[in-house]
Length: 546
Image 1 (tube, rainbow, N blue to C red):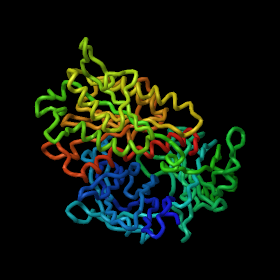
Image 2 (image 1 turned 180 degrees about the vertical axis):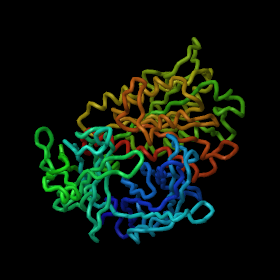
Image 3 (image 1 turned 30 degrees about the horizontal axis):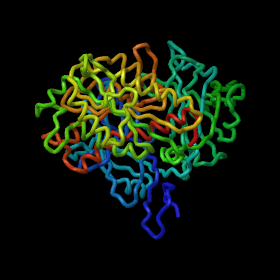
Image 4 (image 1 turned 60 degrees about the horizontal axis):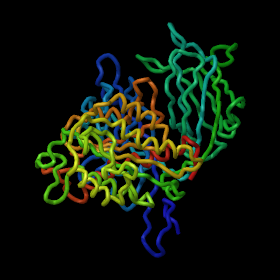
């Protein structure tokens, strides 16, 4: 007997019903919060954990509309035996900020994932936070179980598209639709806009085959090309229909597939009308969408390294106000973070040997400042046995160093990246490196850190940053580039987001100790939330199967 997640179920025992569910969101008649144009809405999904709302995911922002159809799908694990309470909140984007307080609130609803799954498509009126109606605004959420793990990657372009702008060419983008069982067409993907061109090349995009065509390669999809308009509704350039079998003829290189882009209104008006340009499928590849557990079961090892901030801003370790002060219970913020994260990570590393590093301290005997040193003072063998070994090395180190500064991240990131670089030459998905940095303050070498992270984004490596204390961690949000691409000072862009930042203060009580076991679990969950996806993304980019 197999569970829905593919693991073996104990004979005669209870089976967990866990499925991956994809949510598609659209809204109608949203509040208009902008003076000269319409709202720029995006949707945020929250899940209730211990009576608190935790953000799970966001859609993209759609400019200048009160009736958005979001193309970014939100994927969740559906657990039949749990009540998974969700909140969908709409905002009008007002600034390039990840903080929701910087945007105008447009309304929200609460529901359970079970309700959405049972309805398949759920439409509700949006409410303000005092339960008043949010105007005439509504939200529609459609749920679809993902059972087919095949994915399709398409690379699309256009040639000689119609000129739609008076003082320019066109600003074309594509929308891809699939046909629902009731005959209606549902948006499944929207490309980026390519500005001022009649010959666009859009970025390659990947979709679940089930999402695109319900897994039926003979089923038609509809590709619609629009001209984007900054201050109004988009203009239709044209469209075409095709099935995946036809698209698969585009194998890349010289083998492309071309489709006439037809605008039926123009075709009916002009007898001489031929087409509104050509849409080109440059390549179409179908592969398997392996999961994090597929790679773990395939033998991938997670190598865990911890880096600890020993700068003077932490305070004198002998003073009870210091972040490095060890309480009578034997804990402080640094130790709590090490235990919470390490106890999970260590299960994915067979030898349980973890490098433990420090930065920002003066070391004996010459009192020189070091930004990449072994906690056990053995640079040739910085490994500690298990999380207990890291904790013991931390205690030993704290008694033999002097806290100093500045707060430089780049040396320790580059240290771990050197090992990840060696692993990147492997032809198998066998190794991935995780660096946990625990820090109390503002980064001193921000430019060098950005450079190091951008380079590391090409390697089998992730960086987790836990901020302790009450400092301003706004710079950390820049590194944790969930909604924008991180760039180095040179302008080079990261190939993927490898940083997860979590402020520790969200999980501790006023006496700076974790409240209970549940709080520890929530800390670990928040810190490690993005890691499985980052592991899968790296190996997928390298075309490495488990």
